[in-house]
Image (cartoon, rainbow, N blue to C red; front, side, top):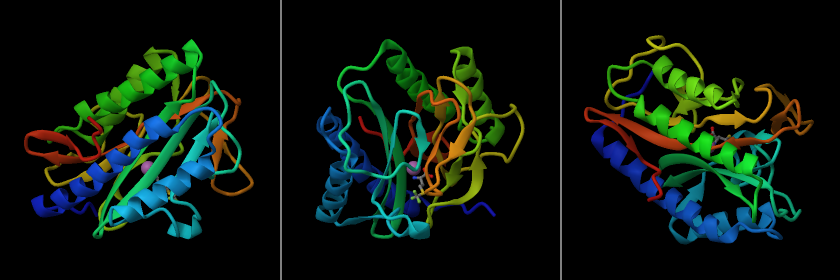
Length: 249
Ligand code: MF3
Ligand code: CO
């Protein structure tokens, strides 16, 4: 069942989203060679606490951290760790913020220091893929239109789209209906309606789209060891089109 949200509920999720966006703006300054994802995770947890919010991922299905921190070939759900980031790495920080019971979810990839031209292109294409998916999120369109917009753009740029992890409805819990694959066929899937709130969060790989699971049962990485990036926003469907609840600008 797809739960539609009221204007009031969307306002509350937007407040959570604005706080989450401010965390990412802080991370732009914090992420550099020598910093550990452990320190980033501590920073995020403290920052949220100071602002009256909590990290919803911590404790979710026994997940232990405020953030997911996925480095280089890690696709998603990397664990924060006490190992320094290196110049040229790319790292994705993903988190769900709970502010007064309202949730917002946003992941962002960061280049650490100076990254290669190919890494830079991966970051740019992945972010653009997210925004193309958002542009397709107008009432009356279908879920497949979002996936198609993302997949056709990414593959046209010579990269691939991860299939095993998808966007999702979000409300009083992290994962709700509808499922939002980042691949698919135009005109297929559920119709988008005013009041839907969901994430779009394409993971884009330089090589093959396939992933494998680490022995920790959480962290997915690319099968070929090549880089993966991810950008995620939480959006609400309104009669005037999509509204980004986690926008940073
Ligand atoms: N933020 C993630 C997403 O985009 C959810 C992570 S699940 C967790 O779907 F357990 F890591 F928290
Ligand atoms: Co997320």
